Length: 539
Image (cartoon, rainbow, N blue to C red):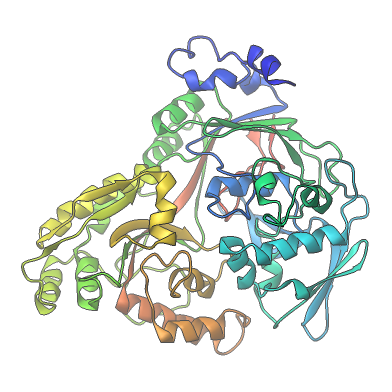
């Protein structure tokens, strides 16, 4: 379908065109069509290539729906009936079977011989090797993610024959096989990519940025950055059950209130990125299904940059931890959706669970005493930076923190940073002194969270925190199995240091809230927080 025909057939539902002009490209019949799913979200992908530098979180959905991986995770049903991925169960995707060597130092993967890319060419072990070589070489987030699973250099990846692929492990690690099922190790059509590569761009990053080359369950029909992304089913997909939905239209609607209105009116099938208040209201109404799952290995938190005075003093960080209005924040910003992360009973963790409540609660007298001891009895001024892309929780949280810290003499003008600039300032440059942040580790282990968020130089350590003991414990623990005698003591020691040093002050463990019409079936919660469209259907 060409652009002129698409636009001609794309009038918005009667009565809404004046108030929602952004929907000029959405077919009027889409929300009522059983083969078409209409989704609204606050922000869309900034690239079609998860390996590209600066790729945002919504782009992970491209990797999930348009590309395959060797393996995926199974599913389980939670207590409330929500279907979730099952971290403890790996299932075939492109690889129909696999074997790990007796010495735990390699694995053989047998590819489905029927699998093809969108252009009809067979998926081969050479495509898998090229894709893995790319992921460990391009640098940035994808390369570090692969490294977390001990997938570090092209020499590890071997083509045995056209449909047999081998990985030689650097070490036995509990993270290696699970790391194959996260969004990063996508299988790219290497012949297409190589045709668009050159000496300056050997991995075809410019081409793949806008033009996916995969063999996943969906193909890209169109992408209008800042407006919409449209998937179309790949009818010859061989790596799972062919989706029931022929087309998925994902529209970007920055306003949360508009996204709520659209789902309430029945003008959209699924609404993503709803703030806690909207999710709580919709859940209470019972007219819309709301799936709310606490995001594993994730916290909304206040980060304190330890390389910037006065946060280089642990006593100042602890003072702030005692001054935060946790209950007010959980009421006003989280609407009590999720799990509280304050009020722990001891500075000695009783378990290796993560996340778990930190041993701080609102105590302004303790906060003042610590500031006085640190030489800041008269307080100080520091900006509190927030991501406007997450304004639904960062703005009310910042206002409550500003009010409470003001009571102990700390003045915090609020620095509002556009979402498009946040990743660079907070995570790449690490230039923010005090900031609200969110991070969730994909591989559901505490040591994996500490690897990303507490080790110096790693992307999500926006606090610039450095601790040699943490570094050693992460190195010792990251790859050992959970039944190793050293595992639980090491995790408890990491958590105890985090309690004491508090470069990151957890506020609450947030829910992933997704609202959907009653006739939408097949929703699954995933750690990457993106919508897996493959199992979805409309009754």
